[in-house]
Length: 98
Image 1 (cartoon, helix red, strand yellow):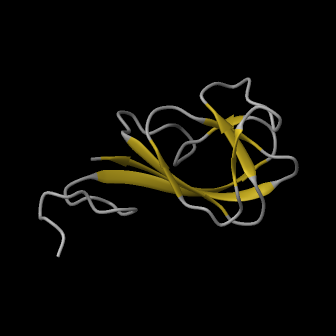
Image 2 (cartoon, helix red, strand yellow; image 1 turned 30 degrees about the vertical axis):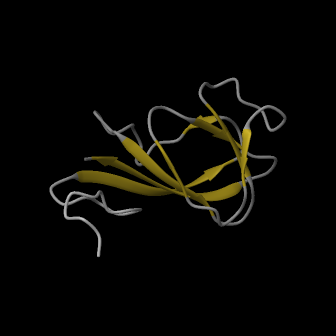
Image 3 (cartoon, rainbow, N blue to C red; image 1 turned 60 degrees about the vertical axis):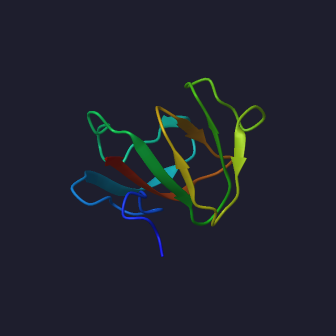
């Protein structure tokens, strides 16, 4: 049984808030859970659903320099991240304030 002080994995924490979206990524864009970044966000959960994406810490990320996130993989990130893909990829993005 999980400790009551443990943060739920890949879920909205009790008392927290967040936003989510489905996005199509091909050119470089910031990963955010809505049309604008959630103020004070602490973490992101990201899942590309129909192709690979490549992520980096700034908007100069390329498919040749970014960290590859394979289709179907779910990752948790903190801070600001950018993504690019070789062709349009559907991505699910959830942003949270804990």
